[in-house]
Length: 293
Image (cartoon, rainbow, N blue to C red; front, top):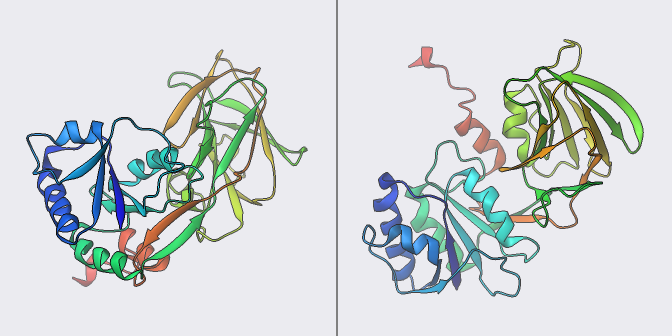
């Protein structure tokens, strides 16, 4: 069993839990690899395991890791997709952040996870992603997103006009602060905070969610994930914000952007006794009323 650990910036409060996680994986006889930037962050603060070292953050195609173990929150998992790409290596998220929809494994569950990994009883989910095409260069090789694609106004600018088409057929022009095109995975993220629906991760759909639309009768719209959704933007500013998950670039009214389902998906690992519905109840506190306590 070979695992590779990944994390973004590690906070001091997580030094202890990370040290305990390393010790448990090493005690179980699992072969550990670390990225050198993570090793440098932890050196002198965390007892380090006997590990193989990868010098740089680079795609993992051709590597034979059984898991990429992400230490952090959902944002760390979004960054990890850039490493995994189409390698098929499953991502296992150990939540050291806050809510943790994607990083579903809590620190207290590590022993159970290690046992399931060694016995081959982990469950895996295929998560669809978005892919971007543009008449002008955008996002280079990082042109896919697990959560969402957004077009947003600049901080101090007026609302923008986003001309939107589905399979080349004109849908509408959104007068809004922005627009989100979300995967089912991303439906519990930014789109949810803007009034979008929650979708099961296995849904064959995307959702278009406006951000602070001027027309009150404009509502989120679910479209099949076989559709190509394209955009042109106008506004009083010369440029606008465009994001793919955690990555951001500037665009102008000269950009013509098309979003479709990505050619490959991402595999997320979870325990068999966890589920999407259980996650909703626990993370969103559904069914819990403090008046009952």
